[in-house]
Length: 79
Image 1 (cartoon, rainbow, N blue to C red):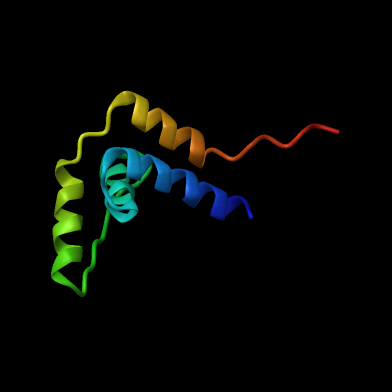
Image 2 (image 1 turned 45 degrees about the horizontal axis):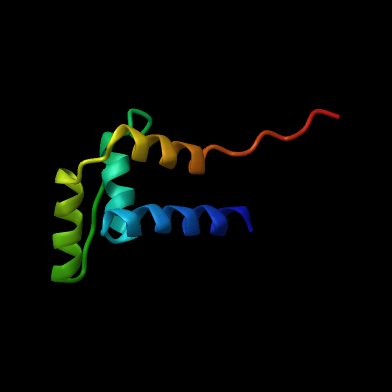
């Protein structure tokens, strides 16, 4: 499935940065102009730490471009 492939690809980006996928996702949302608000939740102390880390995670231009590329749907061929 295309969505699972995207999650796998984003997981690879997160692994390269040495952060959990959730931290990468939150960091991108915080910085994305297309996301008006981010609501974070946590049930464990570890999750609170990961969420807080997202606020200070540096996303280079290359990383942001990689994320955008992963998230952009492939264009359907015109028949």
